[in-house]
Image (tube, rainbow, N blue to C red):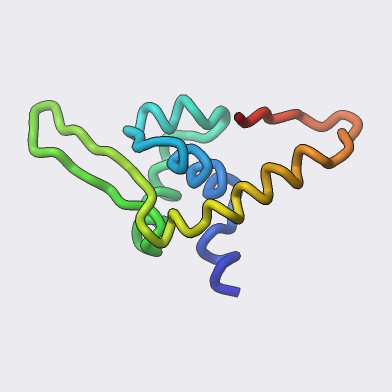
Length: 103
């Protein structure tokens, strides 16, 4: 299934969720997603850019400035992400499970 391939993995849905809220620089995304390594975040962003989900804007300045945003394709994920957030809030807590809070 193409959708699972494009969004599969531990971090891609987190990235989409945060980019739905605002355009972000790499450091902002890294701080917003606890537990993701810089190497993994870089790899996931590159894959998502190649899949047309994320748009990367590089500004020609010193020091270099790079911003990430959702592309038009990525913005179409908003209803799915919203539905997942609502669904997740209704799940009963699991014993011993870590809780991740999203706005």
